Structure formats: structure tokens, C-alpha cells
Length: 418
Ligand code: DDK
Ligand code: ZN
Image 1 (tube, rainbow, N blue to C red):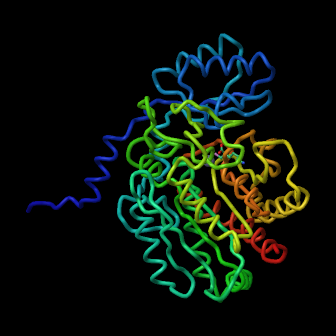
Image 2 (spheres, protein in one colour; image 1 turned 90 degrees about the vertical axis):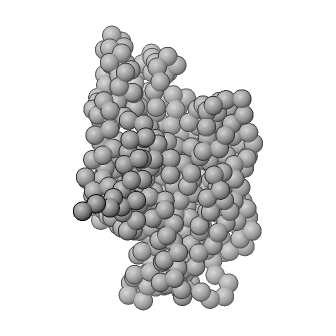
Image 3 (cartoon, protein in one colour; image 1 turned 120 degrees about the vertical axis):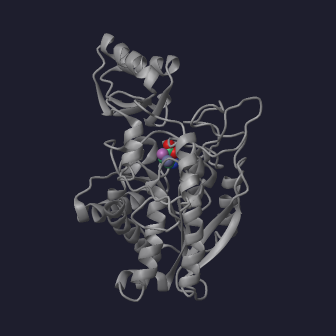
């Protein structure tokens, strides 16, 4: 009897075989104790292909910072020897990246198109889910197409909230960076919680009766698809760059906020390449245009990343304090308190330029300067044990605790934003 191989499985097997393998590639953690060691890491990065996980590039390595970087199998031995010869203390966070990539699915990669909130879903599954949830909850959810990606994929935005009159809104985006899979998982979880607890949970009902949320489940769709099919550790979008084979722009360096100044690279081959101009990328342009057209109602902006467990607020591109710095600091403090009340997860909070590293062209600074006075960036779990490869078993606890912080900020925006 001829056995029918489900098409999804063929796609999945093809993705598996054609995806670049990270077999025996490693992730190291070093904590430079002095300038000599900082210089060593920067020199190492200039001679060896180091994929920085945290911070985002050699540029931002400073003393006493936990620095995580991925090294391919053929380079890891040499890198280890170099560090030993230079008495650089290091820890191997992940011994075999390919194994961790597969383990991330706890052995249950969701090849089927069935959407699941406690699994990582492919873009096709997420796209179908956006249509289904809007159809299932027409009074609470509507789907808007705000533009297309470089590879012509439609960018779906979900408007969540009881439909009525002029309401304040909060814009929340996930998946600006392709490899940060826990981020899109959170946006989906948020919409699930909103639709399932409306009318049951007092806070959620109060929020959705008085606020709307614009939720962008996956901002950088092309990059996300590439991280599922070709390169699990892809970060940027997938646009072509002239005069080079290097692909992609870092969408969180492409916004019009002191664009092209601090914390970026003008080399298209770098992970923090800022593009040819502010909003040069279709994805950035689509989001910026939508927010500009709805500035009258958008009072809060949330952007979700991973990893390192931080809650950040402006500015990243200057050490100048934001006019309502003290208020942002108080809200952030209360939000991380709410978050850690569930499992005790520790979060740092503060000005992004100091808490994480200086950046320009980032979405949260841009939104703030557009007049959205409550603009925050989340770096979700974890702090490097798995990094971008957070296992599916961590989706539920990560999303549940993050809901508490987001709900706290939303309540504050509703009660204080003018
Ligand atoms: O884009 C980055 O490198 C991280 C997320 Se992975 C955020 C940096 C801070 C942006 C604050 N303006
Ligand atoms: Zn990110």
C-alpha cells in the first residue's frame, strides 16, 4: 500500500537538510576583567568569525560585561586556544549548537500547520492563526494589513479591544529580530489571553473596554522564515544590499532616531547594519507610517526582544534623560516587580544606553520622539543558559510573567496618558 508523505513533512525535511548546520558549533561566555581583555575580545572578533549574542557586537564589549558569542565548529578550537594562551577565563554555554537547536523543540518540532501557543509556530502557521482569531472573535479582534515585506509577504497587524469610539491605543511589536523566537510567541500569547479572559478577568476586561492594542506578531517576517528554513541564528531582514552579497539590514537600527550614529555599522555584512537611510527598509517604513497615521490615539509603544531579561526605556542614542525619565523609571520598576512576582524572575530595568548598550535608529526611541511618552523595550528570558534557543517548555512561564508587566504598563498608560 503506497504511503502518502504529508507535504508539510516534505517541506520540513527539506528545511532540515538545507538549513545550515551548527553541528559542534559552540557558544562561549567571557567576562573581561580589564581593558586588555576587552581589547583581546575585539581583536579576536576582527580575526575570527564571532557571532555576538550579547552584546550585539564587539563594538559594545566593556569590562565586567557578560559577553556571549557563537563560534562555528571549525573555529572553536582555535578560539579556545587563543583565550587560554591569553589567560581569558571563559565558560562554554552551549557545547553543540545543532543539538540545542533541535532540543529547543523538546523533540516536538511543530511541522504540522496546527497552531499552538506553547510551541514555536512557523510563519505560515502564525499567518493562518491571525485570520482565524479575527474570525473567531470579531467583536474583539480585527486584522489589518499594514504593508509588505521585502519578499512581498503581507504584514498582519491585529487590533485587539472592544470596538467603540475614540480609544487610547498601545502599539506592541514582536519579532523585529528573526532569531528571537520567544518574542513572536509572546505576542500570540497576549492575543490569546485577551480573547480568552475578556469578560472573565477584571483587569483584562477593563483594559479592553477602554484601550485598544495594535499587536504585530512578526515584524521581520522574511527574517523569521529564514531562521526557520535556512539559518536559525539570522537576525536582520532579507533585503539585498548593493555591491555585496551580504543580505539584510538590522530593522532596530533603521528607524529615524539619530539614524546612523551610535551603536550601528555601515557595513552590510554586519549584524547591526543600519541600512542606506532611515526607513530604507519596507518593514520599517510600513510600521513607521502606520504609527504616524495613528499618533492621535497611540499613547504607548512596546517592542519585544530577547534575551537578557531587561526592561528598557529611552534613550539609546543619547545619554540625555527623557523629559519624563522619573515616571518611566517608576513604571519600569513596578512592571518588573509585577513580572517577578510570578516566578521570581529577575529583570534589570532602566535607560537603554546604560542598561544594555548605546544604539541609534531603534524603534522605541523613534516612537518616543514621535510623541509616544510611554515607550518601552523588553528583553525576555533568559540570561544566556539557552539564549535565543529558549526551549518550548519555557514559553508558558515566560509569557505568563511578561503578561503581568505588560498589563501593568497598559493600566498606567490608560490612567495617565493624555
Ligand atoms: O536591538 C538591540 O540590539 C537590542 C534588542 Se536585541 C535592543 C537595544 C536597545 C534599544 C533601545 N533603544
Ligand atoms: Zn532583538
